[in-house]
Image 1 (cartoon, one colour):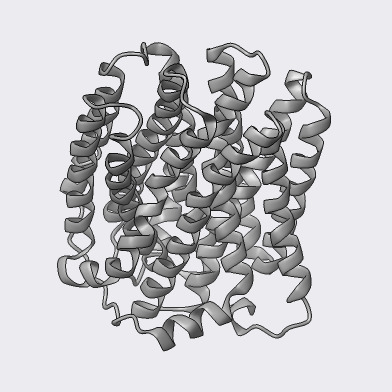
Image 2 (tube, rainbow, N blue to C red; image 1 turned 180 degrees about the vertical axis):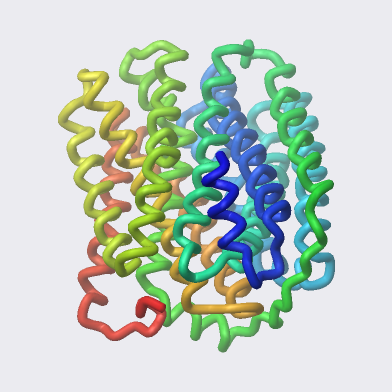
Length: 398
């Protein structure tokens, strides 16, 4: 723990953030991650218990990430006006209200708009936290600091599903527990200053320039969104359709996220010492190999757990290493704008992941979900191959 504090202290030298700011923001993101990890599979299981079709379950889960596609373009402007601390506080309060309404309404049609609001609130917190931690760390240690940040978020997400067997998810109180957890994330904000980064107004030309300069980062963020959202929301359904029990089906999600917890730090450390593009390529290859192997080891618990561990760790690292690379290539308002764009690309993946995964399970029950994950990692591999001989300034190490 002392070593962790020393790393964060050195990483925030000569930046707007103090060590207390950074620790507090990481704690907030971890608690919000806990809420996300708890509610996403919880709501899917409630819908499954109500005999709702897997495709509709996928569409319902997708509304949470779809929200950021609508509000995303306005996030930089809102942050510029309110500051990061205020926008995080408001988003958390909105998310708490949405969860309270979800607990009291019909699990099908009423949940679509409410989960849209909930997802928008959660993703705004993540975008603001991404900006804060990325801009508040130095180039030399950015990969490791972002790995610590990513580990906090994924640890929360991993612990979330473990809470589900402890509650009777058939009643509304289980959803209220999620609201209480989310509300507790307001407490660390007491120790945070209201940093207001200088964010330029986003225009079409600037957006196109950024998008054109970071194709591999775009693919990595998109794939992380697809794999993360489809697996979190549909892995329990995948296991139930194979005849597993409820507790065992939820446990699969925890192995997936456990990989992100234990692989984030070593991968982040490597990205500070080697070319970040190479690290992204290795993550894509490792995740692709694990997802292919997964299909052939169904029925062997330990082998499935190892595959999910690798898939979870490599997919999460695609995003955190991409954030570190953005921090190397952009500063100030350009960095905040670039992170907002990447977050929206991630949201596109998060939106399409459960939809495609749900349809895939319907078409090939339940193995279609595995095919979606394989195809996602393949997309990053192909993008890296296509741009291997292309000189991209955004991928030159600093």
